[in-house]
Image 1 (cartoon, one colour):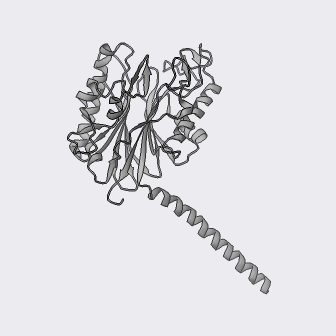
Image 2 (spheres, helix red, strand yellow):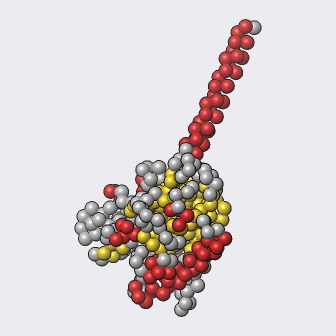
Length: 354
């Protein structure tokens, strides 16, 4: 009888300890998230992330096994693995908390990237299909342990000349730590393929469309937290960004007067960029913030934290394109790289002991 009682008590003690340990793990996990003093926001044009299936509603025939580049499952899997490697490298190996992405054919590719290759179950996706003829859209990956998803809204850019371009993606997130809302705009503005001057009017229209929505948000809340990121296909000094958006350079040592501020401006002035065309670096990928993220209250931009993310394994080491991002293809030649754009990243921190 004593043996039975002893075994019973030992079993109960073991279950109690196990249960406490499990609760401890959960609490520690929550504590790690809650204890964050900052979060990391990044953006990356992933350069033609297509599946291998011909969609009759898209001009995607080039990215199929029967095309001249023989885009097959092996190459797609290699690209997804490469993309995951760079994403896991970001933020000192912790990965970004918010990541805007461009040139994605559909949401399932991002879901596969997260679940199979990044293998981070705290990530989730915000996405919306747009009318782009090639079928490449914008998306957002976010850390759902830190942010709740409140809204996904595609914003149509109505161009002249019957031109069709990608929607701007608006994602509203609520920070679970501070209870603040963040309006994140993911952009991929019309390209320069037709020539810089000839195509400028389309990017100006994109900027005007974006600004209308920004003004609508600020009209309802002048202190709204707005993050505008993406591949703008224009520089910080071009009319669309500098005049229409009026996105200004940030002065870390003085009060900043204005509405929108371009975190990429300082490195742009130093001649740095995310995409190299011929012999010139172009700062096409940028991150612009509203004034509330510079007011030293609640959440703020960490001054001078804007960076171009260049892991050594992603950089071309030799030849004509030395120093550039290793792309998937060079023309029709398969290189097996990452993207023709370098990603960018910015850190935001919490004020007032949050």
